[in-house]
Image 1 (cartoon, protein in one colour):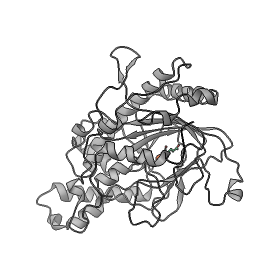
Image 2 (cartoon, helix red, strand yellow; image 1 turned 90 degrees about the vertical axis):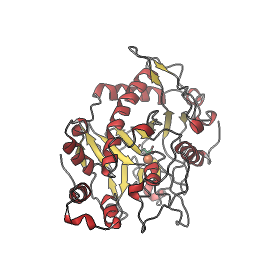
Image 3 (cartoon, protein in one colour; image 1 turned 45 degrees about the vertical axis):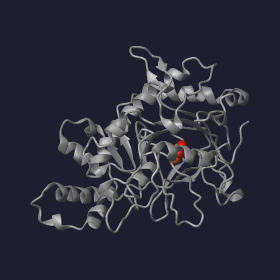
Length: 381
Ligand SMILES: O=C(O)CCC(=O)C(=O)O
Ligand SMILES: [Fe+2]
């Protein structure tokens, strides 16, 4: 495991904080609420994405789990437990889907689904509002219940308020739905390991998110990025047409032009192939390559966490430019809370000097509003 200097620094700060918070006799308990909050913040000038082994998330030792929680932020995670075969089957399924004729894919056009499930054509999304459309196509799905002892899945008939509804599936691809949902449910388990770590990192009880994530509002996407010309920066110096435009959870009401679209959920677990092209911006404004590392997933913090933690967990701006010369495939899975959960600031994230910034709304209302904004520039085909 290699950790960047930044993550080691934040690790030791967090351990320091943990000692202060958990040891009543500690002389430093008089530290101000502002200092305690500052120690939790994820703002960072990292130069590389830290690689974190998450096997201790399953440890029965609370000290080991706490140590891991001190590290967990935007990171590349290994020892996640999802088998290569499960990943490969899903990538093959994605390749078969995107190779279908455009007209067949458009039968599942996402604009036809009131809850944003199905196919997004090339340029159908415009993640950065200054952009001219994203150079990727996608396929979106949500939760479906696995039927016990079978490879089948029941449609989602749960009442999730603003986002209730069913997935759509291609009729002509045997095995597609099974492969994709097998991956979905296994990565969902990885997400369930991370929520207690995030709770610990915020000095909350480890089970804080349990009753808020009973019906995981997890949206998964299969993404396909055609290669971009290596000289695209000459014809498009501002990068207005790239794989996925710059976006973040940082929806700052003070920005004159709030052009960054949001990652709608608490955090994302992303698989990417070897093509590379994902870049993350650090707080100094420098784009850092998220270099693909076989066997790992990338975790990045999402906008719901920003709202919930009053920006203590701040997500980073990211984008994709596929200059590899090859087709690129990736699979983000966005983890949210149950859609009926009210996103009210977590008490450990509010201090007199850092009052609540965001209007209250439910997670479902929030996700819906972000998706409506993302697809507003394109129309049904
Ligand atoms: O494809 C990737 O690597 C990133 C995808 C992404 O950022 C998104 O779908 O929000
Ligand atoms: Fe993203």
